[in-house]
Length: 293
Image 1 (cartoon, rainbow, N blue to C red):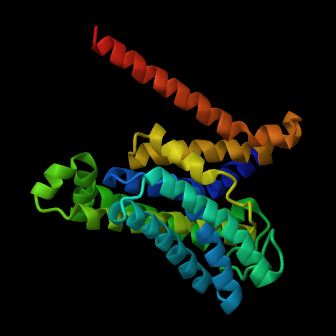
Image 2: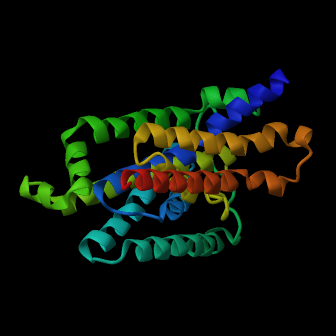
Image 3: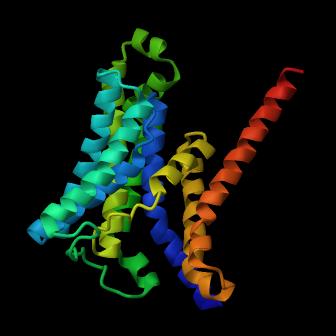
């Protein structure tokens, strides 16, 4: 039992990275006033760029830089479409996500002759162990993500850029009256969001040692739901993302003992999301009813 618990904790920490990365990305864009439902696409694009960069050069560090750059460019493109071109945010997010999904398969076919997955990706040091616990302790991608996540939270909560970002989302007119360039601030928020999502995509590629066309598995959408549940606050959002990762890790640690079909276990995060969102909506409706009595 203790071995299963240890495996569960290690897997939950490992799986939490893409959720938390996209969750932070959602917080950054939403707090600036730009809705981005295309985080799933950002996760996939960054994973593909990381794989292509690492395979082409044989360097995991190059793959890391390519993945982060790909995520930043993807989210910047969404920001430009919404802020500068005045494209509806929902339309842009859906279109970019579909383009990322289809483009990933086309790129795999053109580069590697397969529409499903890439060749093996050169890894970063510390990823060779087959033990889940040792991989979590020694994985440099987790260290990079932890440091970057802390820096992004500090930027949002403790810097002038973060103050301008929050002001742009809270009251655009007041921010402009105070001299804040709202458009530029929202574009910077989009770039930072892409960096966060890029770290999640890079983690997935180096964790699985290859790029798979379906490897994102809806994690970007669940992270967006986590940001909504956390009311776009970094701490609450990260906590919700950790909960989703724990549900996903449960299928690995206890699938054999629970005797459940893998398909049913994979549904747990999505069912939990629907339940929590419905409960939150009912609670807000009840609060509004009490307020107006």
